[in-house]
Image (tube, rainbow, N blue to C red; front, side, top):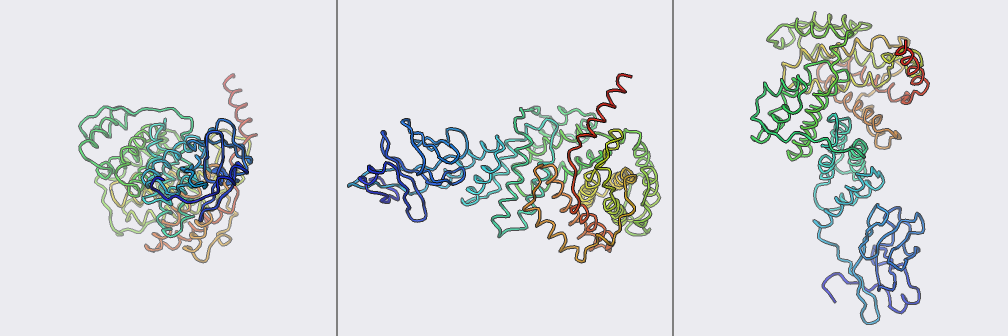
Length: 537
C-alpha cells in the first residue's frame, strides 16, 4: 500500500453486490463505484448543488452522471465533461477483501492552483454560483484570498475596449468593506464575489484590445500632452517607460489627477477611477499597478469632454479666470451658504463659486457638497417615468449619485494635490447646475432626516450584503454612493459640517427608499421615432 492517509471504506464483496455505495469517512461523504475498469471513489455531493452522486449512474466509458441536473464527470480524472465544477476523485486500493481510499489532501499549493484554474473557467463564463464555490474553496486554503481579485484583473485588463469601467472602481469599494469585516467569512466572500462577478460580466465574450508594447523614457509633459491629444500609443509608451524605470503609481498620480480634471467629464469617472486605482493598489499590492494603470490611461483618453458642449461652455472660461498660482487661504474668507446654490444653473453656479475663490477650499467644498446633497434629496422622480422629450432630458438617480462619488474622489485627491482644487470645485459647480432643473421642491427635508448619521450608513452598508439588484451597474452605484456619502459625512462632521452630513444622510435615505427605473421601453421607442423623423426631414 502506498504512503498516504489510507482509510478502509467498504468491503469488496459488499461493493460487488451494490456496484455503487455512499460511504461516510469521518466528516467526508464519498461515493464508491465498481465499474468494468475497476473501483473508483469520489466526493458524494455533486459539486454543482450537492445532490448525492451515489444515486447517479456510470456509463461504460466511466462517465458519472448526476441524477439531479444531469451534470457529467469523468471518474478517472474528475473533469466535468459538460463544463463547470470539477469533481474530487480519490486514489483507491483493494486489499484483503477491503476497499481502501486515500484521503490525504494534495499539497496546498497544488490545491490553490487547481482552484484558480477552475475559477478562471467560471470567470470566463460569468458563472456566478460557481465563482462563489471556487472563492469559498480558496478562502479555506492557506494564503491570501485577494489573490482571486489580482487574478481577475490579469484576466480582464486587456479586454477593456474603452478602458477601466465601473467594475474595477466597484472592486475597490468592495475591498474596502472586505477590510472592514476581518472576522466575517461570509461577508468577506460576498465582497470578493461581487467584485469578481462584475469584472467577469464586463469582459465576457470580449476580445483582446492590446496596449502598445513600446516604451519611451518617461516625460510627464509628454505624458500629459498625449492624453490631452487622445494619443493612446504615446501615452502608453510613456507609462511603460516610467514603470520600467521603477516608478510606481504614486509617481504618476499627480499627472493622472491633472489629466482627469483637465476637462469636465460629465459623470466624473476619470477622477473617480484615478482614486480607485490607488485604493486597489493599496489593497492588492504593486503587482497590479501595470494592469490597472494601462486601462486607466485608456479611460482618460476616451472620456467624453462635456466642457466642449454649449451648456458647460462657461467652465473653461471660469477656470481661466481663477487666479494663477492658486494657494489655499485657510479660512480668511467665509464660504457661501449651502442655500446660496439652490436653483442655480451651470453658469450661475460657476459664477458663485468664483466669487468665493478666496475662501478656504475645504470650506467651499463643504458648501458645494451640501448643495449637491440637497439636489439629490430633491430629485423629482417623475423624470424617471417621462416618455416625452429628447435624449438630453433622460435624467435619473444616477445623474445625482455620480456627483457625490466624484466629490469624495475630489477631496481625496485635492488633499494630496492642492493645485487640483480650482478645477475640482468648478466641476462640482457644473454638477450642481446640470441637475438644478430636475428638482421636486415639495420634498421635505424633515421626512428623510436620520437621528444617527453613522448608524444609518452602517445599516445601509449592511443591507448591500444581501441586495437584490440583478444589474451590476445598479448594485455598484448603490455601493459607491453609500460608501462615498458615509466617508464624506464623517469628514464633514469632523470639520464643522453638520448640515452637510445631515443632508448627505437624508439624500441617501430617500435614494435607497425609492425604486430605480432602469428600462425605459416606451421612452426609447418614442425618442427613436422622433430622432429618425428629424433625420429624414
